[in-house]
Image (cartoon, one colour):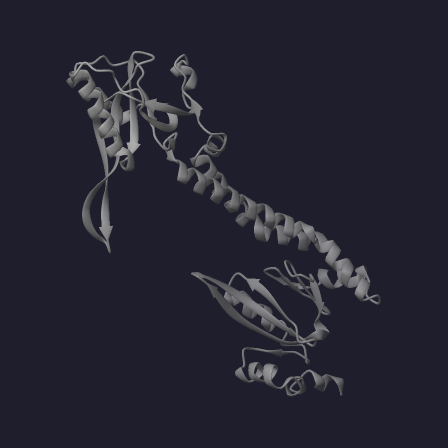
Length: 346
């Protein structure tokens, strides 16, 4: 009995636990644990550092000599579903890495576009006037990655047009991004992943914190005239529908806080449903003599009705969704008990 009830409880949550765990893992894998890099902070790209050794790491880099923009990324603005035109989102530049004597690719958000344009103008003015080059630039922070795909094609096209040498491996730093993920998204995805995995673990802990055996023992302690053998016998002969076992003397429910209750204490059994957002729960309600109500979730309306019908043979139990029962249950408890329950005491 105990094993069957416990397994049923675990099985009732296992798919949700797996789904939540998978969802949490998906969100975390999307940002590849980049939250660790964010929390540790960027590593300054020193002049003597080899780019190959720094590949994939979250770095900070001072841009001083931008040669020009080679790619503009825009997003479409919409107001109430109506397009308001394109808006600059990010810009990619070719820059000179003076320490290594090569060109790199960087990408900045639109918020830094004006600042980068001023730096570019200052750089070319210094070249034209044969003046000292800019000593302070713009610091960007992002992972050092290889430039690939369509972005690389645009970079090569711009370099060929300017008749500049192209490195065998073109390195790229996207400001505010780590491995293609914006830092704000890294925080958001990591938090969501942790929350989903935490919920899954909490469900397991809650289920195992108060196992069926402990709940059954509490019932036996409160009812010293009842033995485990009696419960086992009643359970073995009970009719099972979903996660409910209806025995002659007791009702056993997987997932219920008490695990079981006496059929002699049941006053009324009826069905219903509850909606939460788009999901609907189908429920069987057990009203007991102490005026408590047990609610048991079922997979369908049909199963709810099957459970309810099992109690029609008990002479002291009202069954059905009669409006009169509902009204008396809350307005006149004594009259409600007189309808059927107390008649068995005569």
